[in-house]
Amino acid sequence: MKNVRDNARSFSVLENGGDIQTAAMTLEPGEASGPYGNEHAESAQVLFVYDGELEADVDGKKFTMRAGDSVVVGKGVAHRFLNRTQRRAVTF
Image 1 (cartoon, rainbow, N blue to C red):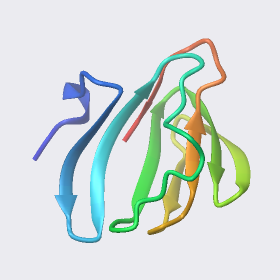
Image 2: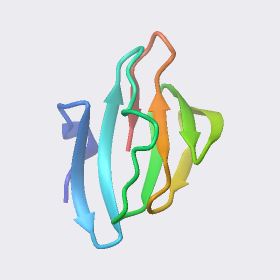
Image 3: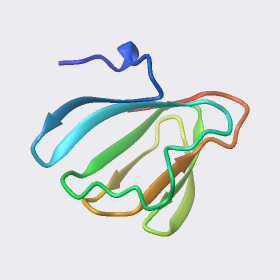
């Protein structure tokens, strides 16, 4: 077991569990999760915005995510998250 609040880096895998993994990500203003096309062939990903706001691009669909929102990114699906605000965004 790991705690999201212990994440000191911008991205940290917390646990792996077969087809799914948990991770914590902190994006400062202007930062992105990586280039679009960041697929995970081995595991699905659920992203929950704990604090802040992100622009999401999941499988070519763009939308805004705010604190309390979540999205499921399936295995092998291209995705990217970008912080266009002036405030830090924290996800799990």
